[in-house]
Length: 448
Image (tube, rainbow, N blue to C red; front, side, top):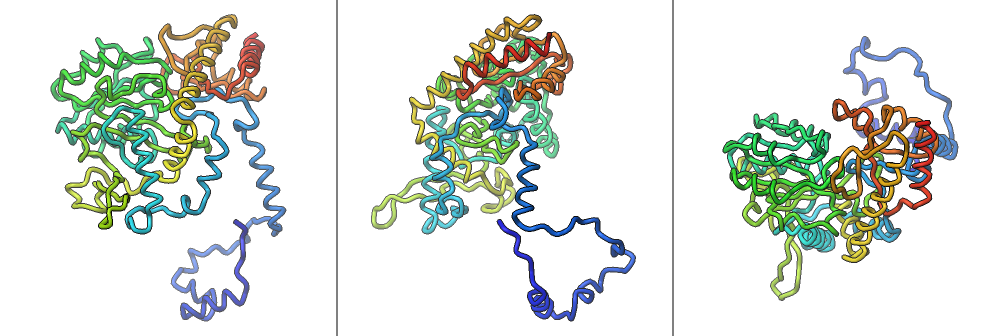
């Protein structure tokens, strides 16, 4: 948006409108001692063109997926976004029609939300999904609060193979309610062991929380974990990679009570970390405890199909003590992007994305295993991410590979003690065989 400064006449008119003679009179209530008397160290004025060029040069210093080959993951993935997503998303009907509270003027927005919810339910195998959350981390934290409300218990058992940032958000949300998150250390095995769950669970546990595929990319034994959660009458909460649901068993079929996830992979750009899209789905039993809102379909007095909000459990809409959440918005625009993306891809297209990501990840993992001193950290099935153990600190290798235009992955040492030599690598359908072979060759070179 261009910057349009106020003219002297504009300033005089504004000052007159508020009843002061000049700018100094406007500041009369501010003590002289609090006013800045020196000269501001500002550059000379530039034209709009000059400022645009300066900003473009600064932006060009960023490493991004257009300039570098990305193997970064950990909840934010470089999946391909069809051009039609952006084109449709930026139509004014979508990016200006924010609020759906007045159904008579927001039918398009409400229908998009309804379609989004329906697609999430189909993918997850759950009874109901809401109109979206802020992101994957806050969705998981809201699921924990919901489990506490449903059971009246305060203990939350989390696998530490759940995204580290998500676990921090859970701890923050839990603080106000004096909940007790208990983390199981599973980094050595790479998956959540049933024996660790058995030792941690008791009759005061509100929920067992796992991620599938987990933060290391590995597949959890979700059937047994669900059984242990329900044995203690706790809720089983699963954080998923939504793309994986195209080829993995849906959480609803193995007993998940709440399913959450990060929906950035559905037509969302990386955006340097946000805004993103939180997914939240649950069972019929827990419907009325779900945070956020739900759009439903109905018929009007003339029998015409229409859409309206059918559940609004926010404190803005109902008595505060009855509210399930104080979440004040959702990510409706990104949910729209996800709806467009899923509609374009269809079942077969989404399956192809998942299959290509998995197949390419396994190819790269095999090739990295041939680099002297490198090996896979875990001997477990994985989806599109895996952990490579290096002969040197991962931080050092990441920095060297950035210089060669490769974003090699995530240094796990920043999250887990004793894992400074471990690199979390993610592969999407966008990665080509030449790119992966180049990564292997460059890693071989920097290690040598």
